[in-house]
Length: 177
Image 1 (cartoon, rainbow, N blue to C red):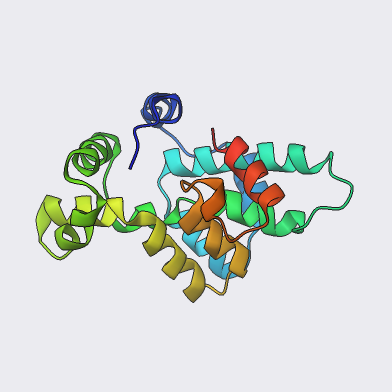
Image 2 (cartoon, rainbow, N blue to C red):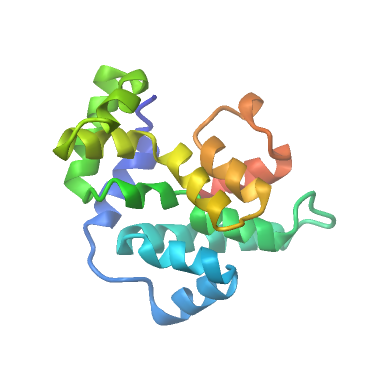
């Protein structure tokens, strides 16, 4: 796990703002998802929903310039909207997530699986640190496209570790910055 301050600091401060996405943004996001995916999206915290909408809007804009994308825009939007869905299982707010992130940096991700078997806050930290895997499991149960599921796991991995088409991954990664 690396500390990407350029990504994390703005996310921290934007997560402190209360409220859901604006109604038109929420309606737009829900229209891009299947019924089961909509239920997952609505479980996400307000800050995570707002972030997901920002990422998906950037993806939509980037897709506008593509002549023949390797992955349909509908799949890319679902991947953008649901890439962080696994965070819901931890039930941590902004400050708890900050502590979990630091714990992962100090203790390493290898401990996350052990921590998730504990109770209380330690369990929540373990769940949070494993959110990409947990999110992929949630998406699989929801019947999401395989590329949406893969992106949930791979969105913080280096490009050479992606199973998704590179162009698709690059657009999503750039939108998530």
